[in-house]
Image 1 (cartoon, helix red, strand yellow):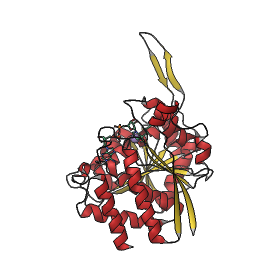
Image 2 (cartoon, protein in one colour; image 1 turned 30 degrees about the vertical axis):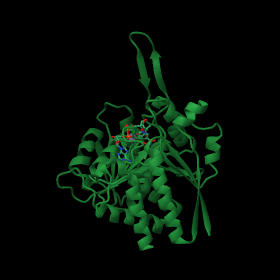
Image 3 (cartoon, protein in one colour; image 1 turned 90 degrees about the vertical axis):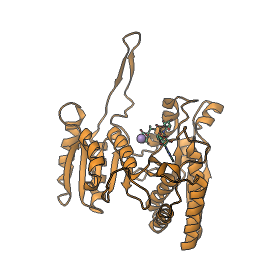
Image 4 (cartoon, helix red, strand yellow; image 1 turned 180 degrees about the vertical axis):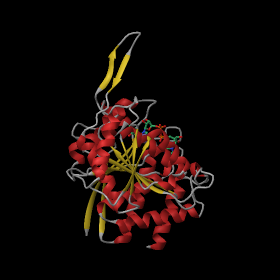
Length: 353
Ligand code: NAD
Ligand code: IPM
Ligand code: MN
């Protein structure tokens, strides 16, 4: 029996609710498989922990996470109580940086029974590869002048290493799929880092002559995500551009509540971390309304990464069977609760088992 050690960080708000759902689904999948055991250890870190201790997570938190095969995270943030810059730098971004999770991989596609807001959506299936360690999210910046004429500065940092790493991953991924990579750029000379980004893209592309390439300015690309998402396969984007594109991708799927993501340590030095695209949704937290599908689909991405693709597929198939049957939360035009959707997915898995 293979034992997989998973660190579960529910975090804040709906993170706690959707984590409880996804853990049950993971447990059921393991029971069905018979040959694998998921040992899930909970770490109740987050905004409540901050209020109690003054820190989002303990000082040795990162070292503890390094012992696991994977980290599974809900969402971080309770802005009414803890300012976002404290909660995010103290936990979410800290984990991404210190576990060297250099890529954030975020798929978007139509799911059976979930209506896209597009009038007549064509079947789309795209993956955004988001650079996850630097770019517009660099630590270089701050308020440099106080007083009435305050000045805040944010430096974008684009290294050859991280830029090329994201692009190579995108090209390799495209080889397993539709063989197209689109680069999200803004190279019309306005943003100084982007001509560099384009040059690295063109140079890297030379090693992948079998892959069709294109570049699009981020503003136009954002519009194309709405008007023709079916034209994309793999999109490689900087940290902020990828962040924005993936919320648009979630929206055209039907809800941010269903979108998954994988934060990958591509070198394999530390565990990778898996979290849905959505946040802690304070507006609906504690009401049993949260859509658990983003977290459950994220569990599938974690299983794929750990080599249990059959289990991951079973989870997603069961989920689609449930959405197709109409058992859905309110964000995707249903009337069911988090718990009802979870139970339906569990019994579908059981039935198929
Ligand atoms: P959000 O994703 O939490 O919410 C945006 C909208 O989507 C809200 O209307 C919310 O109700 C809805 N929504 C989100 N998840 C849902 C789900 N599972 N089911 C149904 N509806 C869902 O984004 P926000 O409001 O900008 O941020 C709220 C907090 O979350 C902030 O503190 C923010 O910093 C944090 N955040 C954390 C993460 C993360 O931990 N990965 C990601 C994004 C935002
Ligand atoms: C996401 C979130 C985070 C990001 C925030 C909460 C820092 O929006 O995971 O998409 O911008 O990366
Ligand atoms: Mn985001």
